[in-house]
Image (cartoon, rainbow, N blue to C red; front, side, top):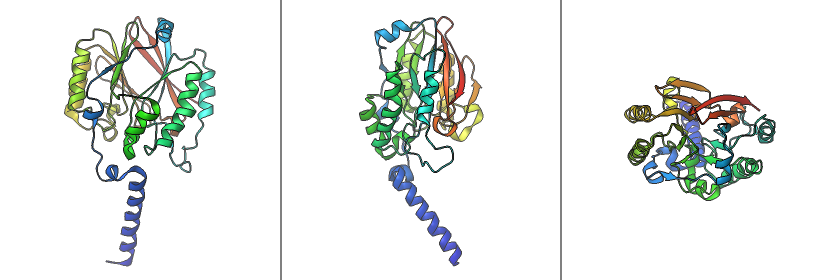
Length: 286
């Protein structure tokens, strides 16, 4: 083997070793989805009574995704402007009722990254009267990050739902690229017995306007899920992961992907109409 080839091979091995050390050996070689363990059954969440009572016929909901605390600040677009985001939210003409974070809170799944998110984003939104509901992302699972996700954020599940006056809100665990058999069965039973219009929130999108590599890879599962949602009053499906804004008409509902919070310096704002069971998004730079 020529010396040049040896140098290239050595550089590749060192690069891979560096990545595996930062993201965890299991993820470097094989990231298995444990959605069946994390999301064995859906959890019913009850909104605080003051929040529930404050929801009128029309209100807004804040949506952020791909926050990536711990990402290399030397990479273009990774300079944090969290205070600019909070200032933008404060200056909105209508204060959002709550926030939904669609995952990839942490870059490497480290405890310190989840603590930074909680201190610099979630706690500060809470002080503005905007509680946050989180979704787990694929980066949040690196380095056994699921443990810290639960401990730091006070989460007990990655698969849950709550109801507002006329709408059911579902939060799914797609962090491994698949819902898994157990979560799919629990979801089927839950939506089949729910007569309300439904909104769904997850990290990995169903379709992402044909962005195949970064959408759900099990096409059989994806197609069954699309059919299930169409038969059960799905109205809106919101996801992150691909870092860009896309929309896809999937029958009775539209899937929207939200720009990356860190890389794009954008967030989503859903205008919800309880009577019509609709959510109209806009995307705002900060």
